[in-house]
Image (cartoon, rainbow, N blue to C red; front, side, top):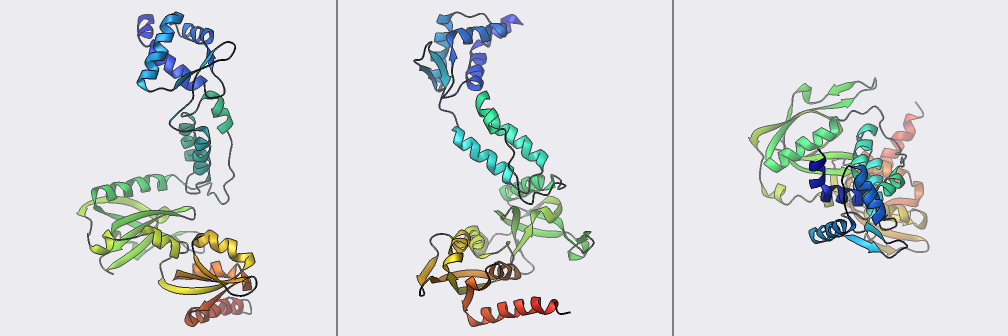
Length: 328
């Protein structure tokens, strides 16, 4: 056993440097020798110097810091510490992940950091609206859909919605959907599958967390020009809650107070022109849907639909129907 450990000295040294050191804290030669000895590995300074040089030739960024005494540390890694912080925050902020799966993924990210940095990554981001009781089916459903996309195969699945009693209600009469997967889209905290439906000769969007018993079929996926040129980024910029609807070129009259939120939604490069003191006309293409109207409603009179008139009238009727429901 001791002989085998001695043969693995270089690997143990690399692991020690990767786990115990970073740009701010290194190990002295005495600490390295002591650490190897605790592992049952005998070593001399000269052999460790040779091992460090071998690691450098292999591509490990081992640096010597001229401190008192000299310290050795791995500085450059696959991910810089600020990048690891972003990864941890992104994982913990994902609403579709359960807390258990989020914690497991964070542990994986932490293994890319030094031990000192791992302690700094030990934090819990509060995720507004995280579904505590959600199971991990979404995680595996995404994997199955990715498999179908890679193999260019169709998928079949059950799809459900919730009724007023919070019970699952199967759609499509309980029959399985058979679709050609086109693109997975992550938007507003959820995964969506954009699929091509042959029967309706068009695209449909499904929330992955409401898909059940997904199967990758042997049947090849449909291939056509519309699928080949599908632009997910264009869809995301127009759709609200990935709700399917008719695209409409609209002009919004936006006040100063609401411009920040409009930029958040449509981007800094959205076309606009000044329309008097404290207002601008913003030109966008949106998917007409109740979700879009709900987005508008949060701004009150700070965002108005100016054109087309038909869209403005439909939005007015939407608000009037809501107001009328409170008179019943």
